[in-house]
Amino acid sequence: MSSYILGLDLGTTSVKAVLLERKSRAVIASQSLPSASDVADCSGLQAKEQDTIRIIDCLNRCIGLLPRDKLQHVDRIGVSGQMHGVLFWKAKSGCDWSSGNFFTAHDTSRLITWQDGRCSNKFLSSLPKPDSHLSVATGFGCATIFWYIKHRPEFLKDFTVAGTIHDYVVSMLCGLETCLMTPQNAASWGFYNTSTCLWNVDILKAAGFPLHLLPQCVPSAELAGQTCSDWHGIPAGTPVGAALGDFQCAVYSCLSAQTDAVLNISTSAQLTFAMPADFRPPDSPQPDSSTTFFPYFGSSYLAVAASLNGGNVLAAFVDTLAGWMKEFGVEVSEESLYEKMIGCALKQESSDLRVSPTILGERHDPFSLGQVTNISASNLSLGHVTRALCRGVVDNLTSMMPAERLRRAGVSRIVGSGSALARNQVLRQEVERAFMQSVIYGQNADSAVGVALVFCDRLGSAEDSCPERMPI
Image 1 (cartoon, rainbow, N blue to C red):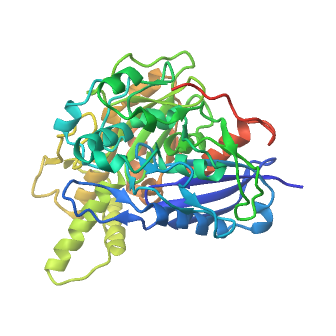
Image 2: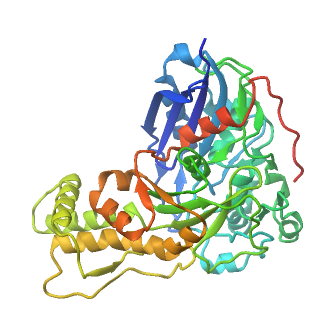
Image 3: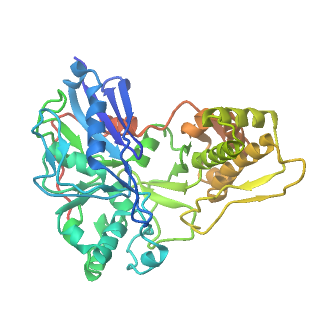
């Protein structure tokens, strides 16, 4: 009889669930639903929060759409999700299983997401320097907790546990009274040393950080526990993996060789490749560097150029065009505008117009703004502008991680992925012009599939015991 792994991804805008058949490693069922969980910001703080109850409701609905006869034969659950963010809850009462074979969120805060902007540069500069190769930015869990210590300390008194949204799901499924966190998520919080696998306890303690909110760390791709109750037909006692980062899982789903690099252009854009097994990151943050090193599996790392400007820049241009049309009294759908501008750009095979699309800045250069240069009377058509904008998105990414660096690292092939690349032929053309390596498509990065593959490949039988807990 076939057995299955349930892979879950709690993304920024949607929740996805897949069933992976263990023997064939094939996805036999998949469901995705928009979470519609954003909470309007009335604070004026550039806060980005989401309703936890809606996210968990979406998760339950998503799994409920999978074939129940196969859910009954799930023998492993893997969970990934949006990194950096933080959720607070109360131990022993963080959810309610009374409704039957699914849980609902209870006694939790809202999820403060990775997009949260309440930590200004001035505030961040007031924080202690981390003992880590990774800088701390707004939206990072530890930075957000520091913000609450200074501005709303009474808020933290209501909670005893903190973690990411996917850490919370694992904790609730397993009935844990604490949060177990992998290095992939801990590194995304800040103040975590990936070489020693330890939080910066002394630094945080000296700064008045509530150490009881630091999760307990376990190795990536290890088990966190077992389901404490039947869940949508999945039997109680099913092993559950400690939650993993959505970026690492997305890469895992399509990085098939050491000589591959993965280029993902969706809302934002990332270019990444695996570092050699003996690589060790710098001892301290390199805030001006456009390349960072994310922990992967074991002691390995990914070299990552993570741009804040990707498909969202093209979406902003479409939104601008729609706004102009509306001012002229013409209503045109954004989908129609997008198709039209891509069609015009396909007819315009090249352009001498230059667009720097960094309208959202970059983490290594937060004050960078977009620019349009080399303007002439002959290159302001929709085709010229769209072509130049697509090239600008790619050029910005290759300026962060040049093709020559990929060549020196032994990368011989680019795996192209992401919704923006999938729907935009002009963007694909510019990618193929920008890289000396061959570019392939069709292996779409998928965090839900990736986390299922991780626990298919990296763990043995369903009877595996839980790992020893690593000290804080």
